[in-house]
Amino acid sequence: MIRATKLTQPAAKAAKYVAGIRLLSSSPIVAAEKSSNAFKPKADRTQSMAFTKKDGGTKRVRSGTTTSVNMSSANPAYYTELPKPKLDLLSKDTATATRLNTFMQIDEGFLQSTGKGRYPGHLAADFKLFGKPALLYRQVTQTLVDQMAQNAQTAPKRATVLDGLNGAGKSAELLKLAMVAATSGHIVIYGLSTLPWANSSRPYGPGFKSDLFVQYELANELLRSVSAVSREVLSKVPLGKSVALGKRTLESGKTLADLVDIGLQTPSLSHDALDQLLEIASSQTVVPVFIGLDEVNTLWCKTSYRDQDDNVLPANRFRLAQSFLPFFEGKSLAKGWVVGATSYAEVRFMPKDLKTRLCPPPAIPIANPDLARDPGVAELPFDVVKVERLSSPEAWGLMQFYQKANIVTTPVTEGLVAKKWVYANGNPRQMFAGVTTYF
Image 1 (tube, helix red, strand yellow):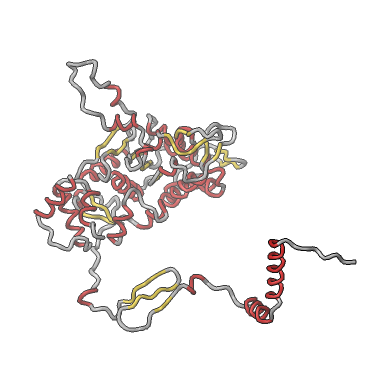
Image 2: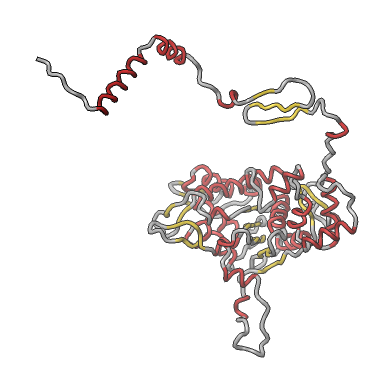
């Protein structure tokens, strides 16, 4: 005998809902729609979101994720494209005093080799507006280029750090130096930004049998840059000794190019290859070496990375920073120059004690010795070159180029240049902001 079971109200609703689903799924209409969807190709989001306007007049055509403008029917009185200024390429041959206060182009191949589309400092905005990478050749540029030529013969015992206010042009000067060094036959080891070494944006991990943390990806990228920029020069320098990298051993007759190749092919050996490269390159006298690090203050900062116990790691706990720290703390090259540039954009990575030493407050008269500033605070293990504000001729050259690049559309007069220069206090970054407010 089957006994009827009385369902509660919620259970009855659930049973009725399940029965409805079964009835709906068995419907011939739904079955037919399912069958048609089974053979329907998946929509291409790129194409399905695209559109094309009909012909006629100036039109905007969108294909996929890129947008282009067809100007064939545009009124030439309003849309004539101005010719872009032709500039000389910066190199060891063109880096002369005759180019002072003029703009010079930076080789785009060099920029791609060192940054893969990234630019140091705030230069990305400048280059995008100019339509090409170009920088002003200043008096400080000529001074640094002359010093580098001298150091290629007799290297100084101390490194040099470029310092100055935000927007003064420190990153630009370091980039120009690296460009000239690359065309002068130097081994160029150029880090356009050391901020990823400290800001916890890249992979890292504890080293094997070491208390130092490793950043294989960053070390590999730096080796790739060195190989791309200085491949020919690296092949001229023999190792001079046998070098063991992992399970491989390079004989003394091999070159620095062979050493770098192993580091590129095996990322886990990137740090070993970089350390060996720095050791051998710094002691040889076959070719000069240029080591340039932007945002060099990160070598002494507290990073945003943490250890296994969630403690903040200082930069000197990383193998990458430890590879370069000696060169800014007394170690010298046999031939070449070590140059860094500071950055105050990320204040958390500018140590207060370093900032005080770079920008010491005015000394209190010795008449009050209890309040006098300790003279030892100003002692640094490297030389400091201050990148000052623009001179009047440099400001004039800057504004003239802005007019040629169609950034400034009014006539460039002494009054206009003086006005922009005074408002910006001669700061190149502030002058750029003053003429691009509406861009």
